[in-house]
Length: 279
Image (spheres, helix red, strand yellow):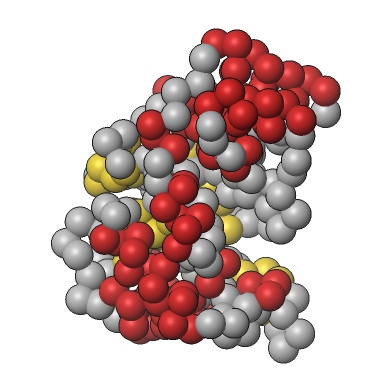
């Protein structure tokens, strides 16, 4: 956990924890094993994780309630990042929730279920390329009221990031990016220049993790797993990248947290970069 980077005003370990997988299948409903979910959260903090990513629409509500049960009173250095801008219907579908009233309600719901007076970071999650002026302005007002410390944006383009920065300071961008999905290469570099944290979601491919012979070959050379290699590539890609790999397993959590010790060679990186070229 030695590698650290800025997340807004805070400095956090470059490997955090994404809590999405603690909910049931499809990020809907309760976990299969509640005690195991609580154990993963507690073990993460024991091992020095100081950045946890969550949302009240994971479950919905389930994951935030697990975090509060497992970790309150929270360590002083723990940064909890949540997301707003979506909701779930009774069948678990993901629907937009971007009106000012919906966003205010979402922030208050997160405050209540996490059991805090102020949210460390709130990401505005967009589902398309529409303007973020109205929703981000609503969140900026909540920030001015002291209910939110920092704001981020998720699933955005470079143009949307520029628009967001004209409304409020932006601490982080959370977009899909990994060793095979490289569409955000330019945005990763842009956020690095701006001093904004870049937090890739689906760093291992999402609900159906990618597999590749190249990953297996590099992993074999290092005595590692393909998952660890994919995460190590992200850490090497840019110093502003913060990882939030998710897992419901203590064993996988512990593997993820050793990735900072995995030093990829130039040959490794060249071979891994070929995955994007092949795609």
